[in-house]
Length: 264
Image 1 (tube, rainbow, N blue to C red):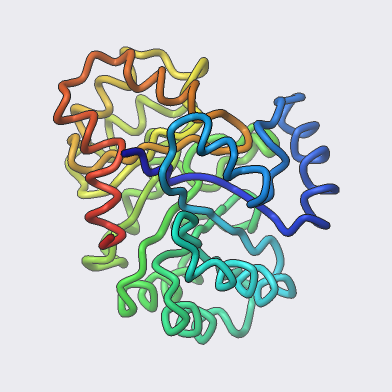
Image 2: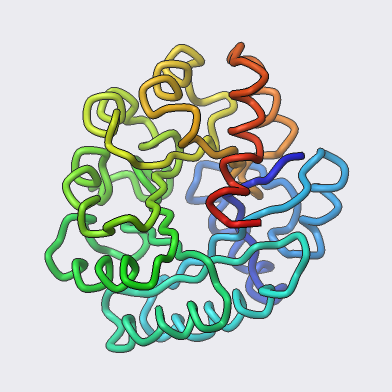
C-alpha cells in the first residue's frame, strides 16, 4: 500500500488557469496530470498510489469558504482525503476551523509564503491553539518555495519555536522539514516531535541529506508525499526506495505512519 500525504488538485475551471501560472513561476516545472481529481486518479492507479491527501490552500480571506467547500465535497471519497485551510486575515478563521472539524475534515494546510505570514508571528497563535483544541493535523509548507523564494516565511528554526502551541495535535513540515534548508532541519527539528513529508525530493535532495533527516526525525514520523502535480509518484517512490532504508522503515513511510495519523 502507498498513501501520498501531499498532493494538490483544484476545481476544473480553476485548474485550467492556475496550473500554467504556477508552472511558470516555478521555473517551468512540468506538471504530472492536470491538477484535477479526474486526472489524478488514473495517475494514482498507474503508479501505485492507493490513497492521497489533497492539500487545499486559502490564498486570500475571501477564498477561504469556497476552498473549504471544495475540500468538504471529498469527505466521503474512498481514496481522496481532503484537508482544508484558513487564512490568517479572515475574521472567520476560528469558526471555519470548527466547521471543517464538524464536516469530517482531518487537517489543514498552511502556506506561509502564499498566505503572507511568518510562522512564528503572534497573530497566528489563536489559530494554532484552536487547531490544538480541535485535534486537527497541520501541514506547513516549510523552507524555500521556488515561486516565492524571498523571504522564507517558514524556516525550520521559526517552525521549531511554535510547536508547543499545537499541544498534542500533529504538525507536519513538508519537503523533508524545509525545502533547501536541510541543515536547519537537522539542527532545529531533530527530536522535536514534528512529522515531515518527503514531497518534491526526487532530483532535488541529495540522498545523504534525506538519510540523515529520516534518522534524526525518526522513521515513525516520516510520511511519503509527492507534491503532485509537481512531481510524479513513480519518481518519488523510486527516490525513497533508493535510500536503502529497512523494509520496516519503508512500510512506515509509505503508509503505516499515515494510517496512524489519519486513523484509517
